[in-house]
Structure formats: C-alpha cells, structure tokens
Image (tube, rainbow, N blue to C red; front, side):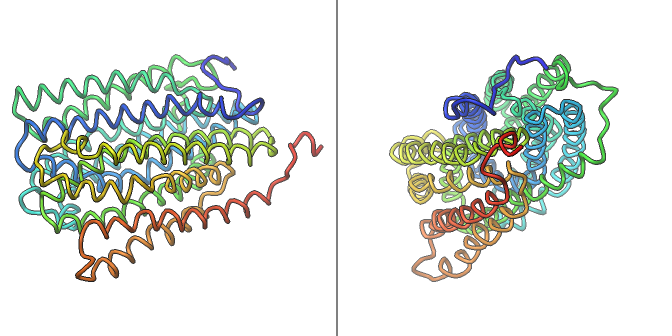
Length: 455
C-alpha cells in the first residue's frame, strides 16, 4: 500500500500525530462554517427582513434529518481504520466501495425526505408565519445537495482513516470559495434572497463531492474506487449499520432535543430567533474544532485496536480529551468575549444582540465540558462500542434538556432564553461523568498489553 498522505498511528508519540490529523480537520470545519455563515451574513445584510431568522432557524432541523446518515460515515471511518491497522487490505477495499454506495443511497433518501416534508416539520417546530414560507423554500432547494453532501462526508471519512485530511481540506476550500461568490451573485445581483444562498450551497456541495470522487478514482489500492466494484458487501453493510445507526441515532437524539428547544425560542419571535441563530452559527466554530479532535481520537483508537496495540488506548483517550477540552475552554471564552461584535456581523440590529449573548454565555463559556464528552464518546466508538454511548446520551443530554424545558423553563420567572440554555452545560457535565464510567467499563474488556506482547 502506498504510504503517501498517511500517518502511522500505531507507533511513536501520539500528540504530534494526533494534531497532524486533527488540525486540517479543524481548518476544514472552520472553513465550512465560515462558508455557511456567509449564507446568513449575506441575507442578513442584503436580503429581506426575516431572511436571517428563516435560514438560521433551519439548522437544527437539517441536523435532525441528516445526523442518522452522517453516523454511517463515522462507522465507515471506524471500520476502514480498523482494517488498515490490521493490514487487511482486501476488507479495506470492500469497505471503501460499500461506503461510497451507501453514501449515494443515503443522499437519495435525504433528498426525498427534505423536499417533501420540510414544510410540515417546520410547522411542528412552531415556526412563525412570517418566516415559514422562506424557511421552506430554503430547505427544499438545500436538500437537492444531499447526495453530494453524503458523498463528501463518506469520502473524507475514508481518506481520514489513513491520516489524509489535507486533500479534503483543499476540496472544501475550493467549493467554499465558489459558495461565497455565488452567494453574493445570487442575492445581491439577482435578488434571489434565501433561494440564492440555498442554490449556492447546493452547487458548492456538488463541487466538493466531484473532487473527492476524482481523488478516490485516482487513489492506489486499497483505497482506489472502481465503478465495476461499486457494489455493497452484505457483511460490511451490516457492520456499518451496527456501528453507524447508534452513532447516527445519538446525533438525531441531540437534534431532537435542540429542535424542541428551538421551538421554544421560536415562541419569543423573529428578533430572538435572529439573535440565537447568529449565536448558534458563531458558537459552532468552537464546537467543530473540538469535534475534529474527537474524530481524530476515534481514528487513532480504531487503528490501534485493529493492530492490537491496546497499551496505547488510554494514552490516546487522555491526550485527545485534554486537547479537545483545552480548545473548548480557550475558543469558547474568546467567542463570548467578542460576541457583540460577531453577532453584529450577522444582524446589525441592537435588539438582536441581547438574546444572542445570553446563548453565547451559557454555551460557549462551558463548552469544554461538551468537548470532553464528545471526545470520550469517540474513543468508546473506536473500541467498537456504539450502542452504549447512544443510550447514555439519550438519558443524559437529551433527557435532561427536555426535562428542563418542560419543568424549570415553564416557571414564569424562569421563562426566558437565558434559563433555557442553562440546560446545555448541565447536561454536558452530567453526561460526561456517565460516559467516563462507560469508558472504564469497556476498557477493562481488553488487555492492557499489546497483542504481540500477549502472544
């Protein structure tokens, strides 16, 4: 196997290699958010009055619909990394082809769901009458890019499994620049408003998907993609579903809780919706950086599990959690510090800043606990356990937030967005403790020494 664009994750120091894998993913994620933020910024400054609320309020619904299938791409990463670590290149190749096939199927399903049911789901979220028409239009166009989004996510997961995060970064940069340019053209010149930013997103998603497919077609074995082999392996499909569905369900459950909270935010009107939408877009920059470290930790654990290097697992967990927590602590608090100026970039109205800052304080200042929680979940999944963290997250993150929203938040004196967002740090801290206990239980099932040492 060609060692170009690869990282040796099964020997030597961990921190430097983990950062080498994670930093391009962090940059990719930040760039992706910058490009997505351009949607809101452009319509906020050049679109109609309720455009920011219409576009921003759809994010939780989009994540709800897409998270289940994004979980499958995580599963593809786990399996590919494991087979690379075990040097089983036949199964690696089969996993690559099965994953790409599933990405296309997933995209088609998402396209159908999003196009036909967006309006109904927005109504269930109590979206105000003045924004629901714009939101529905935005989503129906946006979901035409789902096949491309899935191809990019699965493809980048495949490349990430061997340590290649630079080329996905390049592809995303190219498509993102196109997205920003088309945003300006469609909204400012052609006055397309939310339809323009949605169309720009779809076009840019297809560009990134085509680039990653070209990359895989030109790869060397076992990562080389071949049209004649683009058929699913039944056994690998079952394995991907077994790991990916619980991972996806966890994302869905998170989104369900967030959609419920978004419905309460919608009840405060378009101004609060706009402030929280801007804050949500801003805070995501810290989250994606922590999430990238979580994905890097998952990849490292999976490769070392495949190679039988059990002695490295605890060190990977400790290092990845420390890096993720530090990122959350530093970037989260910097985000809050410059919050008023950042929110004004999205919507210059002064009345929008207060609800946005309330959200930023409760989420960003305590974001490091979310990073610790997510990264520990990644390490558990890397060891092959996916159901356990899903159940814990259901009872912890989702259960606590929903319970909080229907109890404490309903008390008249506490019925404001500040108290509503208190549910986030409380749920993160309690669920992290629960995941830590789960990690210790799972880790005991494997030897402390490497497989070769045991023999």
